[in-house]
Image (cartoon, rainbow, N blue to C red; front, side):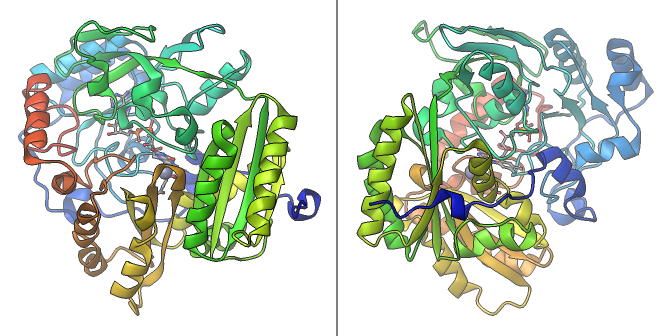
Length: 508
Ligand code: FAD
Ligand code: 2HG
Ligand code: ZN
């Protein structure tokens, strides 16, 4: 028996704006300069002068050396407006050789460099802390090859994720990763952060999907690891050092990625549930009953959905419930997938685990539902200031941070909401405390407690967003002293002068 009525429930929602647009318009005002808000001292790097700028202009031409302060501003502030540097120079190389010459020159002259892709990172890694030169990959956007048979894509690091997906679609292929920032983030940024996203549950992470990388070391040396082979056990797998190292070891210039066939059948269910206990039961049944077609399993709590319905004025296709789940299936035969999904949904409704829901395979309706999930980050900006945490926890404790913090911070007048949502199928919750404005008092009530709590449960203090500027001192809650020491040795080996993305990930 089916309880779902697709026609009735889905209404037209506001058209999504791309992430770059949102960045420029979502909220007014700039954050404090990072140097004023955080206890950090500028290291002994050179201050840019005429001789440096002349070198850059001779190499790139005047158009690709940005020095106009108004134009530089967008490259100095992060997407959620939490950190701000004051770089006076943004470089836009087009080729690996140009990146190599820039880094070699900066290394020789001890000029600090901040690599930047689409600037959608959420841990303050993509913008300068002080006056580091920004090396932006936006002009490195060539697709070299898409192989329909092997599924291998080879492209430059500055290709925008969504553009790659569009190009692949013409070949019946799809990127293995998808995230709300797809309209702005670059594939080089995705690889450098080992971005997770909305379909990692099905297609795995970039350590598995990236076949090869070309990168430039801080001294300008080009490292060609651009293999397109699925199997290659000759020596150490050095590409993995660049995946997720957030621009601390080198600048990624090209990637080879194993892409997946674009599914012929995609179905999406959006359901309302009364409790987190039920969410867990539905997750277990989804894995068991949907098996190989399960592609996404995301959770949103009631208060999080309100940032979309309230702040962004999006419409939910179902009434309010304490929890919601988005369950997407990907397969090759729609009749088969629909039968499976409908059987599963009938079962979770009949057993009372799910109270209400909608299911659809119409692209526009699926997009409207996904907007409720993908635009949450944007919606939170309108609350004022948001303290964000991105943690992996054992699945039974996935939601536990929210009640713990609602009690710990109860009655604080500046708090707008304390909520959780995220990649349930991967055990990765996005926990946030939003406030009318930045408050050091609230920050000190959250940190380091949130990290101690996560560590006690043997979770990860950064599941997918990385360490960046915001979290280096908390890495110890998820990594042993021995492993941090090895990371520091590697950093010294790759970047003895420490010019690449200083103050981030592994500051001395
Ligand atoms: P940037 O933000 O420009 O840079 C990120 C880091 O990588 C910085 O440390 C930078 O120095 C470094 N870097 C960038 N390019 C290079 C390069 N070529 N070589 C070396 N280092 C480089 N993240 C997820 O994991 N999952 C999600 O679901 C997700 N959803 C998001 C949704 C929204 C709306 C937003 C705003 C962000 C989201 N993010 C998510 C975070 C972010 O989008 C990802 O981390 C993304 O991979 C960053 O790509 P970027 O090109 O914007 O990189
Ligand atoms: C997501 O899953 C992203 O939507 C962003 O990882 C999470 O804004 C966040 O904290
Ligand atoms: Zn996420």
